[in-house]
Length: 340
Image (cartoon, rainbow, N blue to C red; front, side, top):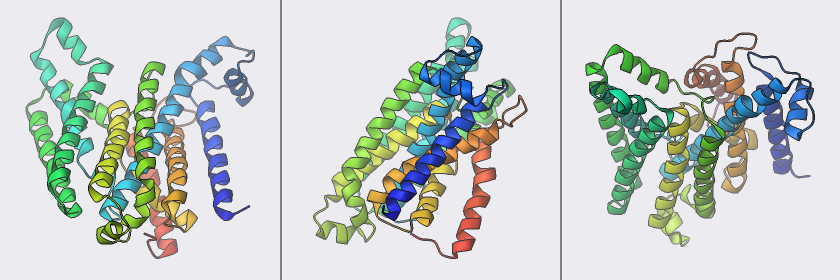
């Protein structure tokens, strides 16, 4: 058995272990045996346990898998497109656009009253506002990508768009009431446990389309590592490939932000971690491993955020950085060289 296959099998085993651990933890203690019985449709001692597993813990764990894998793949695409190890899934301003959409919704809710005002605070309204903000930024970036030939110019424009939207959010926050500001801050913490099965289904569809776009441009990613001129000499259609990468990143990162809030660190760190593990730059090997690695990291952070033995839950956006960053720093110091 080759080393890449062995590594993939190990990653899958770690992912399954982390999923089982996530399903086992919570304010209600459920034996692992009964969790497996619930998943297999067998009779469980307590029907309440089955309800908790299927309607709360399983959707939350699946959301963590989708968010982690989607952000990790987005980070891999951005780092390859810009040939920059510091590039992440939100470098194009998608997260800032989503934050702007939610900020406009929440900060402007004080102008509404009655039924309309209540609708403004609904979960679907926040998801739609976040999606609309990401979509607006994506359209700006796609329009720019058609006009400019230099990829680094596109990167700078994405950063400027992110700065502009962040400035608008700051102005809205300055004039907002304390209640609305607190609601916006809570959204910015990120959350994996608020989705129903219907919402998980829509999220899964967005994730699947984004992954399909990624597969379509996967063959050309290795050529891009050697520069755009080399890729062009190999017959790569740079404009088409760039648009596919931007669309894939927008769908994966934008949907993750819309359904779970802004989640930092994962998209930036996971591609580097996987490169260290595989010791390879071949995207045909990196792509499936990054999907699994992102899911592992996100599910593990969710387990840590649940504070085993405690009813409180830490903000997932904080946990990904607090517990993940030291691990990445340690690995990089141990290797003493960034494999990119």
